[in-house]
Image (cartoon, rainbow, N blue to C red; front, side):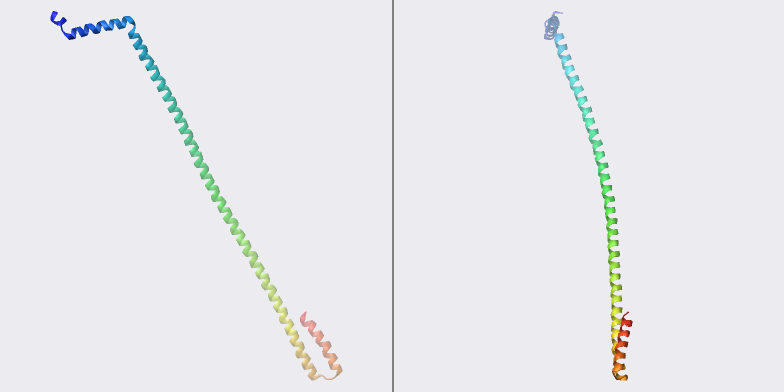
Amino acid sequence: MTGMVMTAEFWVAVAFVIFAAIVWKVGGFGMMTKGLDGRAKRIRHELDEAKRLREEAAAVLADFKRRRAEAEKDAERIVAEAHEEAKRIDAEGHARLEDYITRRTRSAEQKIAQAETQAAAQVRAAAADAAVKVSEMLLRERLQGQAAQDLVKASLGDVKTRLQA
């Protein structure tokens, strides 16, 4: 046993036991446990704060996803409305074009009918004038005297008014 008392390991063990007894007597273990408990409490508080922040971030992310989905739906709705508006404007433009073409066609047809009527009137007037002149020449050649002249004038006026009517 004396051999064991003289070894360094023995004296280190004795010193450790004495040190541990002094620390225990002074209350050092209580301070160490208080320090460790305080550190554990701070870590627990930090973990709770991290959990709260993570939940808050998840809520913000969910809100942004919801807003993005709403924005996409709104964009799709706006695009659909724009397509409908474009179709409506296109149909309205076609209707206006058809109406314009119809009006222009009707106007052209009226002008053509008016020109035909006017041309027919001019042809009748020219034919009446020619008939009057031919009749006048024939009657002058065949009839002689004042009675012939009066008859020719009266007949020509009558023929002229009838042909023009």
